[in-house]
Length: 277
Image (cartoon, rainbow, N blue to C red; front, top):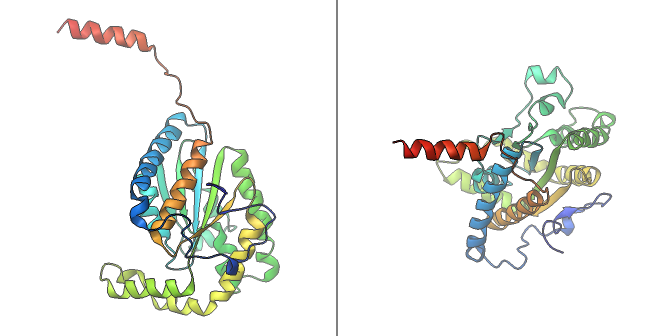
């Protein structure tokens, strides 16, 4: 199986995370083996995002989900940062504000989905409302269990209106998460990212794994597929996501729009102006 299908969860598939190896590297032995390819993929992503911005007929929504320390910020920095911020933005989601809680849970999501010609990356997303909400019992089971169908309908609405959607679950194991927390504790530049709640949430590891399995199984559709990315190795995560994004964007058949002015007339005026100097 080749990219972009290798890590794709086919609709109707029942996901079992315990059967997936977060250390998986495929044929890529180490980071040095993919450095040149990653540079080319990064350049290609920038070209494709520019093409989408110029064409302005469709949009692209990239969803990133992971446990704490899973690499969402790193994915943005190493993969998505190649795109021009004029046409690509990152949208983080924190604890809902009072205004957001006064609306339905998709209200704060819908208003920041990408307009035509733009790429938006969700750092966390509407899936928090079937993950943390479920694990901590913030709403009754009959409420969060009905949200899978609502999310699928919401994503189909976006897709029907020209938004391409791709969703990545960055999969690390419990040991790797603890190692990354230790790195944050020892790095003054990253200590601000660590909190007591990060360690407290580890007590709910199995509950989160179950919640992710259900969310991915129930919400990987033809319109909005999930990809489970083995992410214990950051370089492997970056190249996998880059390959998938490039393959997906190339499959859209985007084209530059025709000029809205008479190019030959402008050329004539340019040459006339140049000769008169």
